[in-house]
Image (cartoon, rainbow over all chains, first blue to last red; front, side):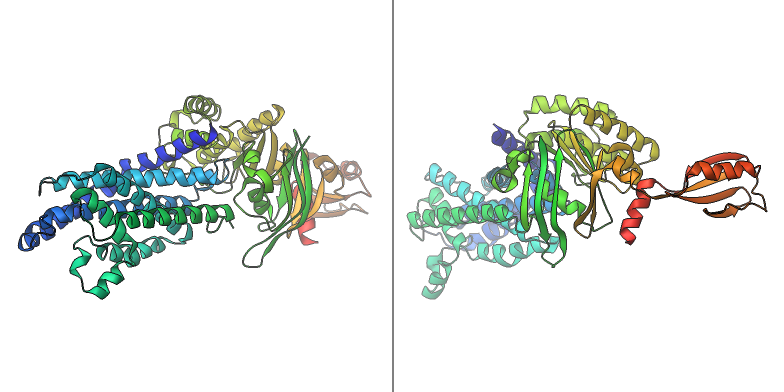
Length: 254
Length: 301
């Protein structure tokens, strides 16, 4: 009972927070992704040939939706949790009997909700640019949900280790964005030379975008099972790591 | 029943600072205990260990018989804490801050709203319930922290300098509130820089110096042990010929004297000398709070 009420309280606070500041949390990513559709899809994409029988614009849609989900799930948790740590109002939770797993679940729910909401809006925008048919809805939903959980956890861990505001953007700028761009948002890795195909397989984001794209178009660059296993393994690892950090109080307690 | 039992408690921070050094103390149900010490003495560290915001290095802490190493969350259910610094989200509404805190303690929203309404009314914040916390005055913010700490009906209330920066009138009304709370059965642990506050409110006092407990007694015992008090006496005019043998005194101006009363002589004897010299006493007061004098003596020892 305590855990459920605590969970609802944290999740509600997190969701209300980003909805209240929607001009900062929802609008900018939608505008950015729309620009991608216009520039890469409509302007440049019209000169690119179909990929596996799908127009370049339609090929782009899953990648851009997933990119929005990744960035927003991550950004929501890292900024909210670090802000709470910075202002010390995280102590409200620390002095309460809320179990660590509930704290993690509450913050992750906020990140997932924002990630999925932004992803859905970006998908709706894409309808203005191309016709999309979804090949396998459960796969689409499974991949987007797991990915948003994974990056919400990554944001949570980033916030735990951050000591100043600059720290929360380092991972995003120097790791997340490059990996996302090289993760097959804009191209199929099959179009790359062998070496770069192999190198791309070291990028975990490839598996998320590839599996998600399979759900839309029914083709993929890597095995669906492997993609799913990679995401499940990484999610489980980050979840256990986050719980370990909280138990030890690393980055949270003196 | 023991509410807090601390044995051999130690805290060494990552930078090597030993904030607590083998601390032992107990608090019983219904106690109103004052924790005294200079800045950096270890008071906040000790409180933070009880409430779970700081990890201890060694020793054991039992709260309501629960070992915090085994089940800190069960112990936390019974603790309300008012920290030294404002640590709520200043952009949130007053009512949301209080109701959320209740939620973290597993109190259903409907009951949380009811509790919040009662407490906000009791502490004069009900009219501000829909204002963001940043719009509150300093005193209101302090009261909001008390409301937040009480919303889950704790059995132990820990207050870390709750009246810092609060005006005299409000401080006294907060004292009255805390006294009533203690009378209703809530055990209270208070740290304060206002020593008169400890003297006024607490039954017991623990004094910490450099992470070690140097005094642990009832306030009345501690005050009795003070062997000298300086009084300020206002008279109509200090006679030029005035002499009081065996007393240590100082003539401040033509209307004021200061006298240090030790256990060898009584204040009455000094007042009689003034009377014999035809000096009319218009006012008499201790130069400083008695506990403050003891505090300074220990600090300087």
